[in-house]
Image 1 (cartoon, one colour):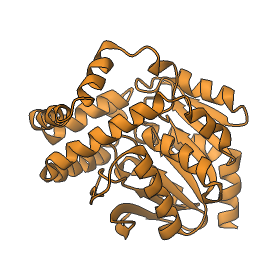
Image 2 (cartoon, one colour):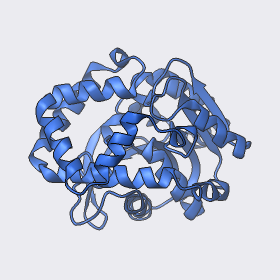
Image 3 (cartoon, helix red, strand yellow):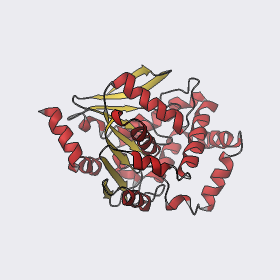
Length: 296
């Protein structure tokens, strides 16, 4: 695993896991980073050229005059494919990264060979009946300056270890299954990002507001309908953030898409149960065909 930086209207940090054959690009979710793919990247690299990027404002990619909105980061992903990779990719996106992957595949069919959506942030039953805590969070995000202040206080109160522990408790059904080396890498990154100060919270707030508005917009379904790439949806049955009902609803709209539900797994299966995630990927016919072509 090598850390690299490309110039895509500013510096973009990404992880290169090596490998050859068709490129596979992994896109993290809200508050995540390229490190989210540490447990699966090396094995994916046995059949593909495996890359994972940090979206603007996350991981080691600074805002650098850019914004962290879904639209801006979708444009960043497209430019990365065009300028850094230079050919169509297997595009894999988790959570907000899955939403971005749908937008990219719908707008630029030539850039996406096939699509893998991992617990994608999509409209569904979860946006129709928000819980009181979610309503409070949405209200805070709508007030300029308040959200940044609250996030700054939370980071200071919890510290890097506490923040990572609390986040994993939210996104995993069983956080103890996450590789300790992956946990430590996230703690170290969180510690390094402390020096960003207000920029750290600003990116999170921008992205949160943006994905919230887009998930509430039914126009997203026209993007789903426009996707021509073969698509696999992997979803944890115990995802607290995006209920599995949302994935089932999406695949009813697109019956040609394959749905694989991972029982007893949360929002980030590539971190929590990497073997189950890779099994689902390797069982998908479109992925097997691409893998066979890469090693032949």
